[in-house]
Length: 427
Ligand code: EPU
Image 1 (cartoon, rainbow, N blue to C red):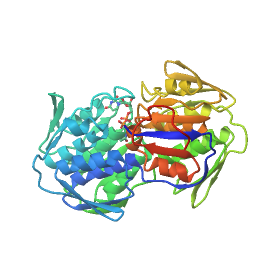
Image 2: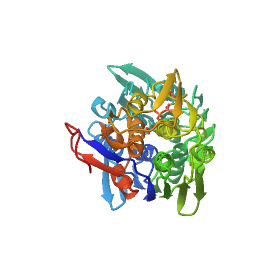
Image 3: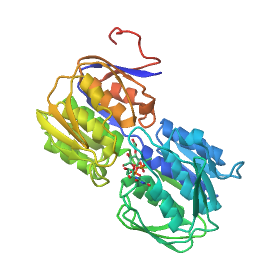
Image 4: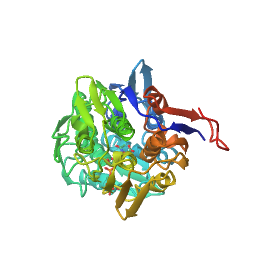
């Protein structure tokens, strides 16, 4: 199993370019199921989840072709028109995003239930209740969800809690439904807004995406379109945090500040200097890091996908920072690993109290999910000596060429084909 070997401490310094957002690219790819026309998408990050989604779409009869930076997708006749099998869904929960488009365009779908995952139970009850509200018959059997409807019919549906992929699924379903669909208590994430922009280019009539209430006027068909996905705010945030943690200086090219407001606010309060320009976002940490509490919440709150990386940074702040995770129930799995590197963190339910600054020392640690892996890489860069981060296949799901980007920023990180059997020589 591949791993990262990191020699620290190093200060992050330099420039890096933001990749396209994985979580915007995944629903954009799924939207190819909504039309017989061709979708031309650019800015798709070269990460494993994107490859998995393309594999799933190929299984569902969507041909995709790369022309330089553009991926062209075209839905064709299908061998098994409507089934997303367990083998693919189990590797990526976002596979559920094919459910809404399949039911709305083909009238039926059979998608494996994604099950739990490392960060929590993560049910899809809201996706299903929403489809039922639009008139689909939904059954769960043999580990699969089957949904069927001659044509979906617009309705008012209120999510019991905001869900990102749930909002995206129902927004796509509503595009081809008969009449008007109103979705309330929607997720307001920038990725939802980006999907609505793409759907609009395909001829969908959507208002309010990015707010709590989305109104969709159903149309008969959707057509070809071209779209570039937005930059990855979580990747951008991760590199800004790496610079903040190591007292460094960074320019993230292509970064947009509006979507990162809650992180930028905390970074400023904790003593970092930020500058927004046409080139992107620049961060510099001139002095001591001050501890700042965070509470994760749906957008526009502090993103749960940056909680682990922020916690790594707070181990270097002077004083106590409290981190409250409200989105997922089991997203502190990086804590014992950080503790092995010398961090002083107490967990009390949904709260983690981080006492800093603690000198970190390199250790062998293991990644448990995508963002926890990024947290451990940051800790490895700041720690003295050698850190080996195992199971980096998690990291490869969502970070494009991370070791290369970090090397460009001065970090001593390399990918090894297997975990070393004993303490290896320095890089
Ligand atoms: N939830 C339900 N019922 C549902 C759907 C969600 O109870 O039917 C709960 C979840 O269990 C969770 C909360 O609602 O407690 C929010 O989950 P949400 O549905 O918003 O998460 P998601 O759509 O499955 C997306 C991202 C995640 C990100 C979350 C929260 C994609 C492909 N994934 O997941 O990204 O953490 O929103 O912002 O967009 C990552 O990139 O590392 C990642 C995990």
